[in-house]
Length: 93
Length: 209
Figure: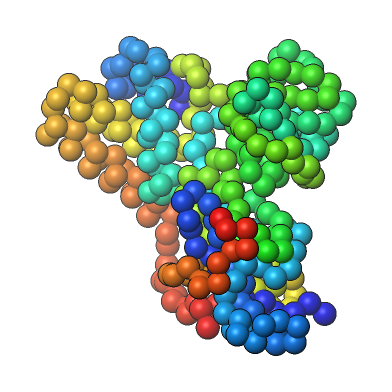
């Protein structure tokens, strides 16, 4: 359905306002129902603990690591640590 | 043969922290054995993140793409994708990046050059070399009334309720706002639950061990 049809249904005439609210709605929909999902792979670097999240990441669905609990180079979900480890990162971040 | 590894993650600010359990006794400090610390070795494509994103664009033709991007840099506070033999077609106004460790998603073009593309995205950091970046160039963006949302008709009805709720909120009618927000969530739940059928099975999460 086009933006114009949505505006007609709602009775809105201001395009900019409608588009801003539609973007909010799309955010909300993906937070609640995850209709659009993608996967990204990042290199793990020795002694680097912190990694940037992808630019368009709205909600994390799963985090997997290669070799996690297997010797076959398979990606498996890794658990979330409740506490930060006592051994701090060497670069101090 | 590759060895098993133990990882975990946590979120700090807007960054993802990856930690690995120290499993080696030889060559390491015995005090750290069994403890989590920063990754002990580099692994190409070692981390996989699955995430939800906001569909404010549509790729019209997946064949219209460039794989000649080799990294990114900063240019007067803006993000500059570097490469060679890049298109300078003025019809390219937006690009969608995939395969980047950091810059996936929609970017508005500022300058097109055969050796770089500067986009409107803010960036102030060092030059980074990165392989595997794909830039899709035939894009429709949610910026006017002709854009067609990448949602099912049923989900679009939820968007209509959301807009009605926001309109009521602007008018100060909070009772109506609550009603339409409830309808928005109900519509979404119905569209999600309509895809579920049959009995459920529960399995343990063995990775927790």
